[in-house]
Amino acid sequence: MQDIETIWKQILEKLELRISSVSYMLWIKTIKPLEIDENGNFILVAQSVTAKNQILRNFLDKIDDCMEEVTGRNFKITVLDQNEEIEYLKNNRVDEKNTSKNEEKSPFKEKFTFDNFVVGKSNQFVYAAARTVAEHPGKRYNPLFIYGGVGLGKTHLLHAIGNYIHEFSPNLKIMYVTCEQFTNDYIASLYSPTKNKSIMEFRGKYRNLDVLMVDDIQFISRGKETQEEFFHTFNELIMNNKQIIICSDRPPKDIETLEDRLRSRFSSGLIHDIQAPDIETRIAILHKKSQLEKYYAEDEVINYIAERVDSNIRELEGKLSEVYFLATLNGKKVATMEEAKEVFTNEPKEEIKNDLTPDKIISTVCDYFNIGLQDIVGKKKNKEVVEPRMIAIYLISELLNLPLVNIGKIFGGRDHTTIMHSRDKITSELKTNKKIQNLISDIKGML
Image (cartoon, rainbow, N blue to C red; front, side, top):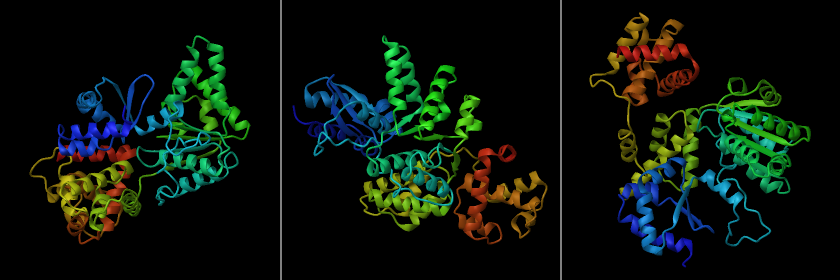
């Protein structure tokens, strides 16, 4: 049989004729063939969880048909995302070209390094702590607990630590695992036919480490046995000066399923959050993405995307990929504002009334807070006016998607950085401030 790369190339040629060009470029062309395992499974790797779901939902039958036409065999197709690929490679020996038997392939994503992590005000302290831990594992900030919203760079930092240690301290045993995987491994050991032996193997796997990194600890099971096992694993590693790094979407005190003794252990080290990036950091992230992926885009496009995606780095980078992909479909080597505006125009938006205007939003906010129009667009800086003004700016930006410069003109000629600050301030408050959440909900209802 031909090698897997040749087979997959022939399959792609057939798929390209059966799938729309947009779907092919976005979901199919980015698939990587990994191997055909000993059980006859054809293993494919999608570039993301979203891509994997799209492939399984919409294209699996077509891939299966084309594969049978090319190979004459009916393979079982398995699609992994990139995190699952790492676990697969750790658990299954895959022969690598130009790699000697003595060389161990790193389980960490190559592109997730400290050099590729864009540092800004929102993440500089976490970055410094992660770098210190990588350089001195087990000696500083142990445990290190990092928390923050989805897509802000937590997993990037974990892989950056892993890549750094793998390169500069290759003798250290290091493991990256999700909380779900830890739980599943423990449950599997309990239900093994050789239970006692399996539990000992499980403990050997997790306790004979120099560095343990656990992602998504917020999903830890409520079961006492699982938490007890993690508690003893944690204690043994810490007592032996082994490094533990934990990530979560919230601080320990807010993880409802967590037992008090684990919450106390997690709080014994350094706890720090990653916040949503400010506009300067978002622009820097997009420039770094452009450089790494060789995406060529006008500076105006970079700024446009950075203004419109303000909370999630994955979404931010995803929009740049969409814009550049659209540019290539249009036969361009450099993405322009034409593609950028088309991507955001086609984006699903919250349904709003057709007659909604900036004046109507401002008038509604004034009525809600019982303040005058001239006050909200004027120069007054007392609290009774500033908060309504910021809310009005946020609502105009969100519901009408006007350029910041235009919004600034509406509010007495304020510059775009002032408008951006107001919008980002309310966006940030909405995540945790119930009062602001209720205010915005009430005013949207009035609109």
